Amino acid sequence: MVAASWYAVAQNPAIHEYLAILHGARNGFIYGAKVRFAHALVISILFGKGSYHQRMRGILRDTWQHASNLAKIAVIYKTALLVFRKMNGGKQRSVDSFIAGLLGGYAVFGERNGINEQVILYGAGRAVATLLPRAKSVLSSRTMQTSPSATRPLPPDPFYFSVLATFVWGYIMWSFENRPHTIQPGMFSSSVYIYRDSNGWIDWR
Image 1 (cartoon, rainbow, N blue to C red):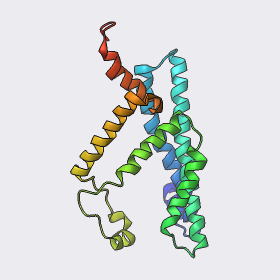
Image 2: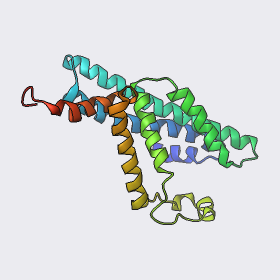
Image 3: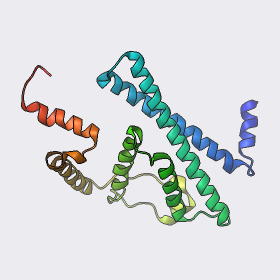
Image 4: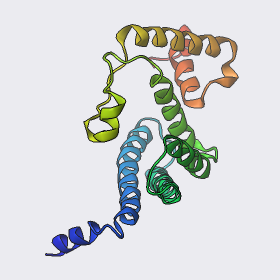
């Protein structure tokens, strides 16, 4: 009965768009918590330092930051889009999503810290990947506009992906050898372990 009543309220056109903002915040928080908790737990077990109590505090701190950040950016992004639609007679322009993303990115991820750096580097890699030609032709813009749910992500064309992989890894290794100060700390540490520490033996590790 309660669920049915809530569903009826949520479908009310007068408040539907506003509840969608809260729903986005809720989904962002849940997703961020799932992703970060699992990642932080594994990293803490494998590479963590300090007591187990200190490690758990770190795991919960990182999980809260990641989850709350995704909730915040969902609120900012969806609120901005709603405002833009209200300003444009209920219609959303193509540029609106970009501007809303700019606002959310600056407000939430603009501060440099470990969590934000990981998220932005992750996003940057995916942003570059969107520039690769797709393996198949995408749906027509008319289909995408009339039925967004029919749109499905398509993998990059294998040839162009191999070209990207070749140049990305070539540039990463060149930077590691010639401009190591520019390498992201996590990648630098793993690269040192794999490529430099393997040049000699200290113990079985």
